[in-house]
Length: 538
Image (tube, rainbow, N blue to C red):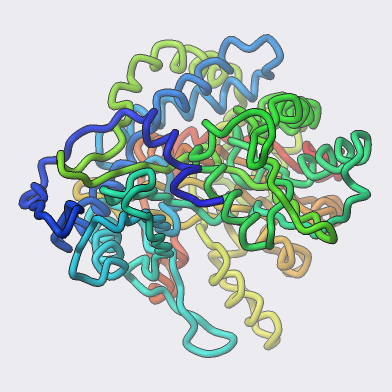
């Protein structure tokens, strides 16, 4: 099984646009009976830059159309429709090229297929990484990568490097052997953290057993990776590494054109239909309850060692950021994305306007006890519109706040007086209040909740995704609330809902520094209430 043969069909079926890159014209020369394609390292740098720009501002047409279908899906809940309407409006805003579609602009991953007929005379990994770094530094993206400064501490690299670069040699007579083919992936932490791997046995390969396994795994995924997902399962593989490599490719859509029958590797449409049905039956929905947990599903079967059955499951979330590219004698080509998502706006705006008109407005400018009293009058799963101050704090800030408690010190007043929003913004464009600014995954902050609530903080929390039973119990015991806002709509939130921002503490944490923001009509849903109600209860 070679990767170039697996990916060849999707390269052949992709529509590319030619990039006007200086010195992109390849020089060909005879070397025996071969033609050598010479590519300057600057071309690799520039194509990486263009790719990571485009995947953060544009979407594939198929992805947008899959969202749009949910608006007319009779099984979709009102919350499903609200979420996808917001995502479509978000896509129209990000297509303007200023605010990226998601604040977590992700880890830069590059998979390259370098034909033996290609010569670069350069450090390809360095050139590609440099192009990625330039995109993150200049396109209003976010530096999310941290590097260790000791065994227990790490710090923001301020470049979004290191990138993950995996390069493969392709025989000159193989698919793409005369080209340099590339797959660029920007994957955020929310979806990456939803990758699960299991070492199972042959006993699982029974219809009822496998079906039950997949049903349980879909429910365990929850909503932290910003549904509606592209959902993928890979069964088999000669090693765990091969299995997970195939999962990475599948979640990027790079294996969509595999055969649908043996021999392996192949896709199984019948099991894909089952997987999608389990996603709908989970009723976890597009983030806040409903049917639309997944846009589609892929189940891929591989060969395996007789004593092993590796299985992985993963997602590509609403911020579906992948791009194919190729460099050949005919020029430099990048996958062509949909640049006119505004055609979906009329229907999306209608859905958003109707829901917002019926939503209850919550004044965050009042004392926290009053905010909680307002929320107590709302049903579980209800849409509310938040206006007023929020404290923004996530992983690194929570660790520092917990350290204060551990030392017997009081929590800061700003953390006690306001609701807390788990988030970290992308870079602020000139003339804007803030950069793209959607919620981060709530579950990572779960271990802190009970101790913070006992100290009078975190009594109203705002994030994305389902939470642990311990958080549900703490909300019941202390009268707290966990709200969710839309994951994947970061450009929309930055442009329409955040009206002011100031740095409060720990600027050295970069995007994880504590901020105070003022919001206006920020949409949120009641996910856990003060009575122990849980929107995501099985």
